[in-house]
Amino acid sequence: MAAAEARASMDGFGAGRLLLITVALLFLGLFLVLPLLAVFVQALAKGAGAYVAAIQDPMAWSAVKLTLGVAAIAVPVNLVFGVAAAWAIAKFEFRGKSTLITLIDLPFAVSPVIAGLMFILLFGSHGWFGDYLREYHIRVVFAVPGIVLATVFVTFPFIARELIPVMQAQGKDDEETALSLGASGWQTFWRVTLPNIRWGLMYGVLLCNARAMGEFGAVSVVSGHIRGLTNTMPLHVEILYNEYNYAAAFAVASLLALLALLTLAGKGFLEWRQPELRHAAHQARDRTRRENP
Amino acid sequence: MAKPEALELSTHRARRVIPGFGLTLGYTMVYLSLLVLIPLSAVFIRSLGLGWGHFWEVVTAPRVMASLRLSFGASLIAALINVIFGLIVAWVLVRYTFPFRRLVDAIVDLPFALPTAVAGIALTALYAPNGWLGFWLAKAGITVAFTPLGIVVALTFIGLPFVVRTLQPVLEDLDKEVEQAAATLGASPAQAFARVILPALWPALLTGFALAFARAVGEYGSVIFIAGNMPMKSEIAPLLIVTKLEQYDYAGATAIAVVMLVLSFGLMLGINALQHWTLSRHGRR
Image (tube, rainbow over all chains, first blue to last red):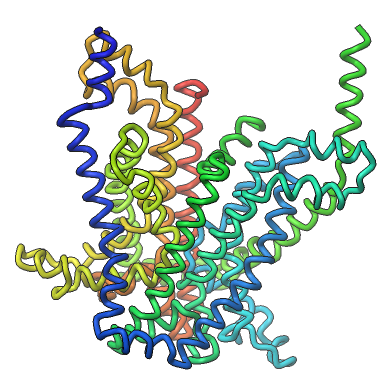
């Protein structure tokens, strides 16, 4: 009886529980839901006609195309890296493994603005490779290659840090069986490893893509804001906003908000398929630490 | 007695059977060096070229000091707000059932998914004097938009999921029986929370705090719209880097960047060490 009462009081049937739920929902409503709502309301503030016009604007379209193009390069590049890094870290033991994992996470600790600055220091006109690039008429900074580089940097850890715990959990028994049955290394990877990690892989790709399409700070520093040429969607939103063209700014922003909602829906779906994914990223470090104290 | 030996031999051979160690580790190292390590070291090497005197002069300029104080101060407040409310949100999501719980859980990740520029203009629209919230706050005499308070609001927005997502798995693993035992032994819910739950959550709270803080210190997109960006008052350090770059003051921008990087990395290392210490003190969970 006492235990049941204790459970009831701990689970907080009654005032405490209701209060906590109310506080949590109010906080989330105020800080998360309201801003999201505001985007759509502001986007439609001048009517559906203005909304469609803002989205059909040629400058908006070229921003959409550039954003899709940059993500189409950055995501696959980081995918290949993520798979390679996860393979090395999950399937083998070597010295300095936890240092390597820390280094892979490093871009998370760097301000996006500093990420942009790095590439200006390397490839800008006064940068280390500035003279060389000028000689060969190659533009990196204030051009599309700089935007791609900055995006690859800020999205660098996403796929690797999702795949490392997934592959560590899989172990290497399946691969060893396939290899002992005579499969080649590549066959083993394509037929055994890849199907095993497919949900984790999609999870990483989803998160990486969301950040790649939405990145603002790093891209802003290296882009030079040339309309129709080096403006991604987030930068286009900024320009429209700074011109006091709020309805158009929020119209383009609403496309990005829709992308965010799609990302959350996809994330929810993948977590439903593979519940271990939910906290995979956070466990990565702890597990490695436990193995190599 | 020959059996364990044979087993050991077979696992040893199997370990060598998996191919691709050289290829994948080599590729990882090259890619990591080219994209992360070399560009990051470029910032440090460039700052060495300034000379100590010039570096010190740039970094201690009143405008730079004010922006660093603001960035780290506002991030500290935002991370503390997130620790308090993130704990409540995580607790409610793990321990209670209520309608639309899964939807509420999914929405927590919104700041990860929503581009920062979109968050920035949406928050500004809400808190501007004519906005949904700003209008009522103005009547109460509180100005959020275009003040340091607005910066705290934006940084709270982007930091929340870090705390919630770090706490959730720990709360799920937490043994309910221990709390129930505490309650059976006569502890009030508050006592059980302070004596039993909080000590177990401490490392996760610190990690969540550190992640939210680190993200907030470098944040740019969601802040610049709501901040007002007045030098000495509401100008964050990342914005000052951008301003210096636009004036072609690469030396100044690099010096501020180095200070931010050193402080951020130092903080992360410090918190990691602290976490290690709490983990070893409380035993392995």
